[in-house]
Length: 241
Ligand SMILES: NC(=O)c1ccc[n+]([C@@H]2O[C@H](COP(=O)([O-])OP(=O)(O)OC[C@H]3O[C@@H](n4cnc5c(N)ncnc54)[C@H](OP(=O)(O)O)[C@@H]3O)[C@@H](O)[C@H]2O)c1
Image 1 (cartoon, helix red, strand yellow):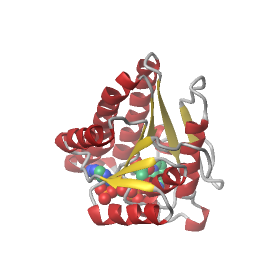
Image 2: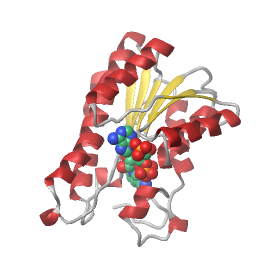
Image 3: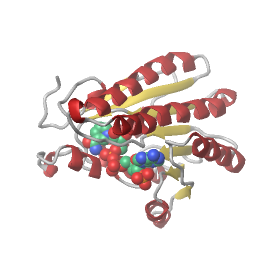
C-alpha cells in the first residue's frame, strides 16, 4: 500500500482503460472505494473485477460525460449511495488529430464537449458535494499540450489549455472551502490514445499509467496545508520545452 486512504470515496472518469484504469487500481490498492465511470460497461466491469480480486472496493456507474444529464445522474447516484465524495479524478478525454485547415467543426465540438464541457460539469457537480463537506480534492488530467503546442493537435491542444484555465481559476475559488484542485500534465503515456496520436514513438519509452497513478497518490499524500497547482510528467526521452 502506497498511502492509507482507507474509506475515502473517489470518482475516476475514463476508468475503463489507460490512465484512468491505472489510477483506479492504485487508489483501490490504497483503501479507497473507487467509483468507476466511462461509457463502456463491459470494460468497467473488468476493471471492477480486477480491483475486487486484489481485495479492493469499486462501484461501476456508466456515464457519457458529453451528456449533462448523465453527469447529473452519476453524481446523484453517488450522493444517494455514499453521501460523500472525497476525491474526483477528471481523466476522461478524447483526441482527434489532423491539420487545422481540414479539421471538421463536428470533431472540434466533440473534443470540446468531452474534454472541456464534460470536465467543467464534473467539477461543478463535485464542488456542490464538496463545499458542504468543507473538504475534497479534484485532480484534472490535462496534458503536455496544456502548455506546449504540437502540429496536427490544435483542437486537442486548445481543450487541454482550457482545462488549465479551468483548474487555475477553480483552485483559487475553492480554497476558502478547503477544497484543492490540481492538474497533472502528462506527456506520452502508454495507452490507446497515445498510440493513435503518436504511432512514431517507441512504446517502450512511454510513461506507464502507473507513473501517473503514483503522481495522483503523491498529491493526495500531502497535508491540506500544501497546495500543488500542476505537475508536468514528461517522457525521459523528451525535451522539457
Ligand atoms: N496517453 C497519453 O499520452 C496522454 C498524455 C497526456 C494526457 N492524456 C490524457 O489522459 C486522459 C486519459 O487518456 P488515456 O491515454 O488513458 O486514453 P484512453 O486509453 O483512450 O482512455 C480514455 C478514457 O476516457 C473515457 N472516455 C472517453 N470519452 C468519454 C465520454 N464521452 N464519457 C465518459 N468517458 C469517456 C474512455 O472510456 P469509454 O470509451 O469507455 O467511454 C476511456 O476510459 C485523457 O484526458 C487524455 O487526454 C493522455
